[in-house]
Image (tube, rainbow, N blue to C red):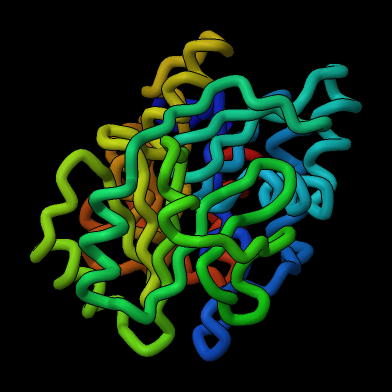
Length: 280
């Protein structure tokens, strides 16, 4: 549907809290997509419009979700092409299936990780291993990481440049991590704080928006023609960048303020509601 002369040419979708309903007791999302949301996403593909998943998740996790959503298959059947995916908060852009990393930005996270562990010595740290899982200094709570967890020494984990680091402390809160990030400054890195005590470290200047811009450049789509939907603080830059940015109803106020509009909460299929506005 065209509204006031505007119609999305690309739809960028966050995953957790947008396509998937989070379990606030367990601290992670259920891996099921409701039928209305799945049907709405497939309606976008059926209309010939690009769909790009954009998340803080690692490539392996995002590829698995795309397969379960049958999005990989739908894109291949439509035009024989492969799905574009923005992973690791913009640090990794890949095609699927199979996974082919098209773009990756890495950084030296060693100083930031050491500074955080000096303040929170019991925190769990994870570094992505593409296609495998994560190297971790200790086990994460069950269900929070996809793929294999490989125990490793922290100094070995941060010796080389990485695309993303996860810091997790079940004994802290999201507000504790916000205070910690402001206190430390975390020079030379970008950071995103989840709705639990979860801190993502990324290369400075890298966001979901920068990853989506690369995809748009490849596809010849102007950012002004992008519809983006998300719910987290790591979606703020994306919602501001897109021609139409929509925050989920349960999003923090800072995310809603960055958006052009606010949809219903994820547990009321807000993403499906927004997509049906354009792809009936």
